[in-house]
Length: 218
Image (tube, rainbow, N blue to C red):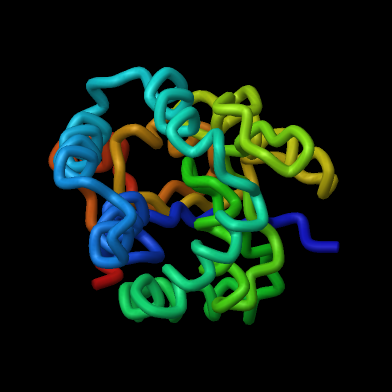
């Protein structure tokens, strides 16, 4: 059993764009989203990038918009989303780094604020068996509009990562974490090997101040 975990963020780390924005684009092309909802999604994405909103509150609001949809329908839709669009946004640098960690016997794990319906197809395509993410509450096959606490975001990512490390009889001092976003600073500060990827301005500043390596995946 490995004692080293290599965590990878998904949006703008494994993928070259935000999975949320790619999802909205696909919804728009398929006629499943109004112009207003598309603009709202871009607005939320901008606030998220700047770390200016409470993710659990927004996630709950977004989840409530699909409360009438079945989990099976969403899973099937997200698989089509990946096969037709998102597959073309996987970063070559991410693939190379994942393979590098595999060659060392490390446990490669995706950790993302996105839902399993979005993360799952990406993980399956890359042959990554393990992923941690934000879960939506489901009752009798339908979404309730609530999220399972804690969301895998900010401090919540640390909770999920620590729990996962304990399950694998290791701790975060041995772990790697690759991320592009300042919103992931909590987990970056906890792991033994933080690596920033295509960082936003605030994360680059934090990385420089802490002497963290900076890599470009795309």
